[in-house]
Amino acid sequence: MAIYLVEEMDMNKVLAVHQARAISPLKAASKAVGRDVTLRTWKRRWVRVTDENRGRVFAFSFADKMGLGMEDDPKQPGGTSTDICANNSISVLPGGASA
Image 1: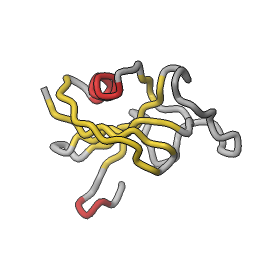
Image 2: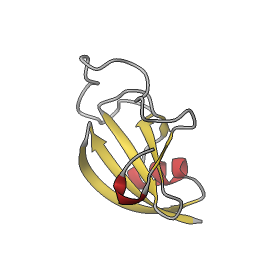
Image 3: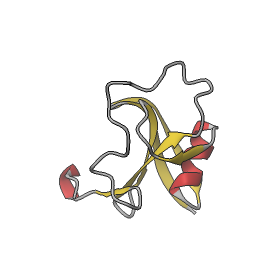
Image 4: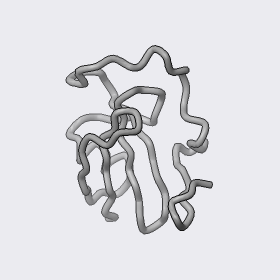
């Protein structure tokens, strides 16, 4: 099992940081935040999971709004972020740049 860095996010602001040992980024996100997560759709609150060994970043949304304390931002367009690939990952290049 890999160790993942899991960050709870509010837009681009990090709210909390966790580490989780899991068989996949999805399982790591769910285990670290203690809630079900799903592949990311636009939501103000989301979870970023980094696999530092493979240089991959994954984005997930909370599966429900229970306990979030805020609604999604209505000013933002729907859909996924344009820098997230079809498999819901971002390639990270040395120096922190994204591919």
